[in-house]
Structures are given as C-alpha cells and as structure tokens.
Length: 177
Image 1 (tube, rainbow, N blue to C red):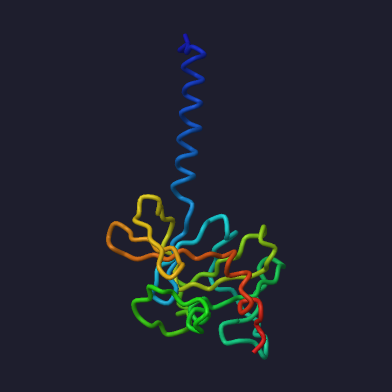
Image 2 (spheres, rainbow, N blue to C red):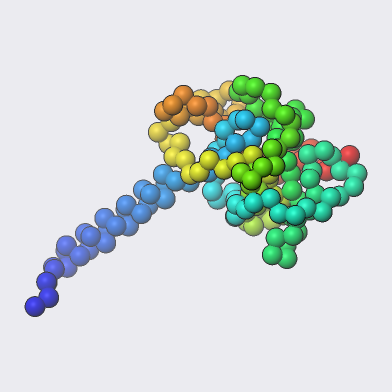
C-alpha cells in the first residue's frame, strides 16, 4: 500500500522547498571576474551570456579599448577590452594594487560577457578570466572613493562593476578616436 501523507505535511514541504530556492537564488547573484589583475563582482542580471572570445571584425578610427564587432548567432556586439578601458583613467579602480598591462590577456581563459538584453545595448565586455559565482552577502563591505568594495574571507579585495553606470558614461558611449 502507498504511504499516505496528510495535507498539512505536504503544504509545509512545498513551502520549505520554495523558501530554500529563494535563499539559494539570493546567495548566488553575482559573478566573479578578473580584469587587469583585479577582482570584480558583476550582477548576474546584468549579463546574458559568458562565452570565449569570438572572432572580431576591427572597426577603424576607434579608441584603443574598443576591440571591434563580434557576430554572436546573428547579433552584432561591440566588444570592449575592460582592462584597456580602466587603464584610460575613467573607470580605474580606487583599490588597484598593481598596474596592469592595460590590455586584456586574450588567453584561453579570457571570456566575453554579453550585456543583458534588458539594457537594450549590444555590448560585450572582455575580461581576463571568470572566477565563478560568488556570494558576497557575508563579506565585509565598504565604500572607497564612491565605489563599493568587498573583502572576502581570505582577505581578497573585490570591486562591484556597475554595468548600468558603465553603459551611461559618455566616454564609454563615444568609441570614435
């Protein structure tokens, strides 16, 4: 004979599973990436996809940090080298520990982050490597020169990359040299 459960136990089990799912969703809402030797957190809602560096078509007379255009499944994306963009000074981190090369490494570990479609902006951000999902809720948080900074359990320093803020910066929008 099959095991019988009462309605109250069934409802409580459903509620417990839904609450556990909500807690799990809250914990893993940021992606850790490395840009020019610095660790950054990016909200998962701000990116739609992470992929290896695709073939690029260069665009003449653009700034050094604009690498060109990439065709991703029929959609064109402008690819920005985030290390070079930071190096120019507008987006430099106030907690930089060492000066980077000023260009993304473009190794097998390099990845392109496609900006989420909800922003209506076909941009792709080239980072040196993806470090995986991070839960920064338990980390110590502080503000340094107007930027949010996190300290993980191992003493690592993480910045918060504001994708929306990046997309509205006049310098980011003007790619012409």
